Amino acid sequence: MSIEKNSAIRNIAIIAHVDHGKTTLVDHLFRQSGTFRVSQEVKERVMDNLALEQERGITIAAKNCSVRWNGVRINILDTPGHADFGGEVERALAMVEGAILLVDAAEGPLPQTRFVLQKALEKNISIIVVINKIDRADARPAEVLSEIYDMFIDLEAKDHHIDFPVLYAVGREGIVKKNIDDTNTDLHILFDAILEHIPAPSYDTDEPFQMLVCDLDYSDYLGRLAIGRVMHGNAHVNEDLVCVKEDARTVPLTITRLQIYEGVVFAESSSADAGDIAILAGIDNVEIGDTIATKEHPKALPRLTVDPPTVSMEFGVNTSPLAGRVGTIVQASRIWERLQKEALRNVGIKLERKGTDNTFMVKGRGELQMAIIVETMRREGFELSIGRPTVIYRNENGTLTEPVEHLFIDCDEAFVGIVSEKLSRRKGKLAKLINHGARVRIEFFIPSRSLIGYRNQFLTDTKGTGIMSSYLKGYEPYAGDFDTRFTGSLVADRTGNAIPYAIFNLEPRGRMIVQPGDDVYEGMVVGEHSKDSDLDVNICRGKKLTNIRTVLKDENVTLTRVQPLSLEKAIEFIRDDEIIEVTPTSIRIRKTILPAQQRNSKTARQAAKALPTAE
Image 1 (tube, rainbow, N blue to C red):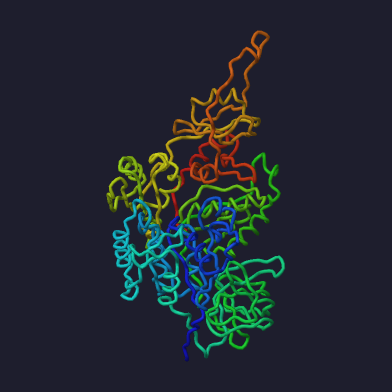
Image 2: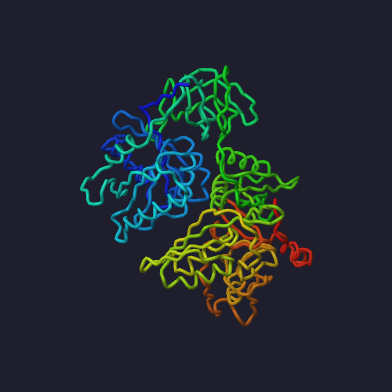
């Protein structure tokens, strides 16, 4: 065995919590490394190239890019900052030797900071800590650094991990400093720190070519592309190799095109050396976790593993009376194919087909991850129905257990009482309370199911100023039942159009979620009942006109403004006996059983109250 290092390459990941400045920092790395011309017009957050990422301002999928500094190519992986996309982080960390841990100078380490750091420490990669946004008025870099050391110690980091270099940054201006009082105005210190503290990729000169597939892409011209880190050896264009599958089966292949990252685009290359992050074309049957190796020595690398899913959601065909009017893809087979395609790239989700029914179970990390999948599908022209997210229970030694979250709340002191009261009702246990002056940090241990449908309520309670985030703590015994929604539903009892006169007379009964003129049908939820029971209503009733009264003499009807129903709000709103009808142009909530007589039967009510069971 002869171990050598490829000193011309560095592979790093940028990991942080949501909105701590990862993608903005990458923008300035591009500009100051010379990747873009001085006069070149470049949009902000160039790595967030998905439409949903640009709209929401968050990173959803991990992406690769590279910059050059002092003759060294630095491959950079920009990772998501939300815990629901943790599978993307784990996939990215499999390709790197080091990571830049970015922490907000005011907010400090948050749940995703802890989650990604734990994964990095498990893989024994080098860490550079960058405390970002030191120009904030409420910045507290010294305290945040102390909290970071505490977090490393809590995660049982080894001595060489705790002895990490610390830098201070103003990411939006492209400035990194060794000390807060320094006057430098560029990122040169960060580039030099990467070359100094992040080890070059090592490889065994005696081993044949091996590449671990960590991502997939598709090209209209080249077909499926396998993206991964070359662990040993090198490969060339037109070389005959094999793909080693999970069951040790080998599939022959020929590299038709070989590319590497240059900035944010692919660049042609005749070969890929050890340590490179390469893109191979000519591989049809490949999955994330497979190994590309030589025909003579088809030796598999350890497969990529991620934490198991904790939440499941039922996907199915849209069976409402309005089905097929807008969407171009409505068949169960097409929905199943699309979900399988999603599972190929997204290692954090698992699929199950429920017998012969046209329903499929999708398992993932959280409701946001599910919502992103559904939103992407509806923009592609799909029509489908989805159920309420449910947590995945386990049976451990005869005891029913459920996932528990470590919840972090950051809110004004005036809202501590109402937030604590609501979370206590949902089986939350207070773990820590820290007062930073005007803002208070509260930590709870709470069942994952308690957070489904709570976010909107939390924002209302804190008047939109609260910040809530969490990570999976583990599984604990089932905490018992509790009410998640104290209101019922207003349900349409017939098919027709929503009439303003009927809506006006129903407003005292609750909050409406449909607009005048909207199509409705029997069993469709048209509003939120102010009481805890469902109420069947006639929302199609018009005002009776006689030869005495006319429309011109009647008073105008003034309706309360209806907030548009977003996908996330619908997922949080629905009960267990309700599903969401998703089309490219609209989102509707309906009862699983549409006819009122069948829905109100004793059997249906008992099914809605079924006890949780382990898988």
